[in-house]
Image (cartoon, rainbow, N blue to C red; front, side, top):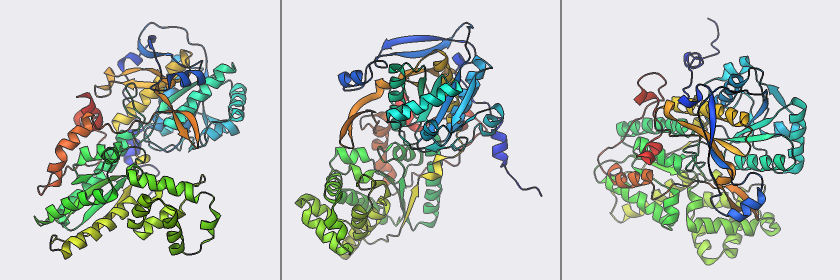
Length: 550
């Protein structure tokens, strides 16, 4: 039997034709809206981006045929993977070829470093066809090199001029698109003749606003995680003996945890933004979890599921203060580095912390306290994403339940299992929604380039309607920016979108979570992503988007 190189699903997906907004299916005309301004720090952002600030919103509508001069475009995949990246490239390619069959598309290899180091391939029909509707970023690879230095911009311009490239498309998250905006401004100032367009990518869901309703990959990743959570809940409801503590990706915001909760209805879901708004302590979070566990145990239900956002620790005000103090105390601290044992280091740290932070530090399990002092990034900061928050909570919950058992207030059993769902969702075969959305984003990017635009992000809106009714256009990247402190300096960055506690998705969750926590099982089992079948099963956007639109 011949070895299998492709699964039946891979073969079937290769022939899937993503849906496009009706306005993009023929010739288009560009409509300009009103002038824009940044979300904050308008004067500072305008001064930093004099050539790309205040540009109007753009919408594409059906129009008459026109001449489209030949162009060449370079594309970059930047940052972590997200399902649908290959379809953005497919959309750019098809859009360029529809405009002018002589147009060319180049892929810079390994992320932004490919632009700087002049590593590239020409993306042909044969190459692009091999990657349509597939997950991953392996068509050209990705990387996390930041485009921040003038020398990098000049090296990029050098290879673009050599290849005749008129425009660069950067597919990335908030930082990558901030870099795209800086690059666009630089090339206009220096009259390089190179346009720069961004595309909104991140499974974390924190690159969103009025014009960018969701970032691509969020839909697929959340559906993958929700399937796994549903499977675990079915197992928990069958075995009836484990509490599952499930940490989910999302360091800077809790969109993934919230969306997965809306899809699967776990017993508990922590939302980092709510923890911060209520100024909750770690002990208070533990106490809230314990109450649910004790209540369920009183009905002989010694099992359940708890969703935990990856960045929870950084949103607990007291922990945030402790981490900030540790970053200051231990950066380049030779006395600390000279200590040999963990106990010596623990005592040293306790003696330097403020009384409030020292109290928080003392209450932490030793393993977590050790992580806080040993695992540093190149800037000397705590690597919070490495802290296994689910294990921390299991240990603290178990300790508190043991106290209650000794007092006769807990008569149940507590056995816990921990999980972290992250990489499982980043390169999944994109859902129909993400396959369609990313293809439309790429196609729209080609039209922005053809129209001579720069400093824009490709935008596709009205996403809860059928794809034919989606609205394609562009939004100036400066519109999303504000000033924030990064590595001690104020820098222009795209503002991260946090979970809004007064938004419809969180309000729905808050109104229902008590029912999900009680003794009656409210679990939902989403099952695997479906690619073929009724549209209500295969093409639905996230619950977050649906609730926002309702």
